[in-house]
Length: 509
Image (cartoon, helix red, strand yellow):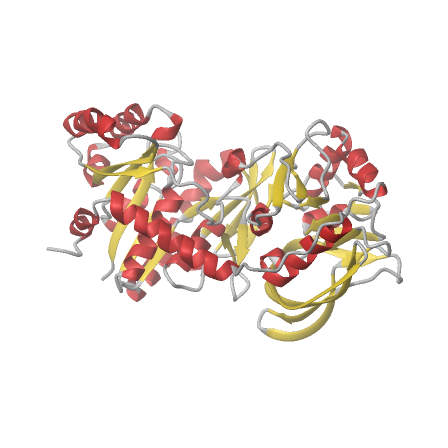
C-alpha cells in the first residue's frame, strides 16, 4: 500500500505546487516510486498527455520531477475559467461542459469524488509514495461541505498533512493559526507539521515566531524554506502572472506578450524569457506597449471575448500599427485564431456571443464547435520566412488544445509547418500560416518555442534585422529542467526536516 503526504496551504499561491514538485524529486532521488496527485485543479495553463487527455501543467512539472510520463490520473478534475464566474469542467482529461461556480460548488463537485477515489486507487496500487497537493485553503468555510481537493482527500486516505504559509506576503503566523482554528478537530489532527515558505533574510530572527507557533498550535514547524528566485519550473496558473514583468526592459531583443483577460498557456513563452539576450514583458494596455522587436499573441480560453477586449482597449489598433511599421507578430492557438478575418461561435461554445471580427492580418476564418482537439504532435518547419530569413527545423514537439476549425480564404498563403505525427500516428498535415511578407505567423501548436534550435533561429533573425550578430544556441531546455528540479530538491532537503517527514509518512520507524 502506498504511503501518503499531503501539502495544503493557508491560501492560494503559497508554494504548494513547488513544494510537491520538490518532494517528488527528493523521493525520486531516494529511489522510491513516487507519483504526484491533485484531485481538482483550476488553471488556464494545461497540457495534453500522450493519450490525448488534458491536465494541469503543475502536475506535469511534478511528474517530470518524479521521473514519470504525465497521465490524467494525477489530475482527474481540471477547471478552466471561461469568464463570467464559470469554468469549463474537464473530467479525466475530457471536457464535459461549462458550469457556473455556484452550480459546480453547490452540488456537482461532490459527485466527482468517486472519480477522484478511482484515480487515487490506481495510483496507490502502482506507486510506493503519493505526494498530494491541495488547493487554495482547507478553511474556506463556504466551500467546505463540497470540497473534493483538500481535507476530504486527506480524511479518505488518512493522509498526514503539512500546512504551508507564505511569509513573503505577510501575515503567515496569523494565517497558520487561523487556518488550524477553522478546521474540525478531526481535520486538525491530520495536520502533522507546519512549513513557512518564501522566507527572506536571517532565519535566526524568526526563532521567536517559531516557538510561538509550536506552543500555540501544538504542531511542529518542520521547515523554513527560503525564497527561491528564477526556479525555471513551469508556472501553474494565471495567479503567477502577477510575478511576471510588465514593464519593458532593455535587451538585444524585446518581446511583448499581449496579456488578455482570458490568457491561457502563457508557459509557451517561458523558454523565450529564459534567453540571456531577451527582455520579455506582458502588455495589457496601449500605455504599457513599449517598442518591442516581436509581438506575441497567446492562447485564450475565450477567444471571442479576448478579441473584443483587444478592440475596445485600443490594443488591436496598436498591434496593427506596429506590424505596419515592420514589427513581426506571432499568434499561438487562440492568438492564431485572432489573426484571421473572423471568429465564429454559432453554438456559443466559448461565450454567449455569435462571434466577432478578427485582426484581419491572415486570410482565414475560424468556426468553433463543441469538439475539442487535444493531441500531442510532432512537426517539421520548412522555410518559415521571417524578417528576411528562412527558418527550418525538424522534430518540433508540442501539443494542440483547441475547439475551432480554421478555413483559409487565400490559397496563396504559406503553411510552413507540417505535422508528421499526431496522437502517436504518422501524418502529413499542413499546419500554421504566414503572411507573404513574413511579418505575421500563427500556429495551433503549443510548445514550439521549447525547441532550442527553432527558438534561437527566430531570435537570431531579429538580432540580424537589428544589425546585431547572431548568437550560438547554447541551451538545452530539457537539461535545464533537470538541473532546476535537482536544485529545488537540494534547497528543500536543506531546509525541511525530511527525516521527520518520512517518519510522519511511515517510511521510517
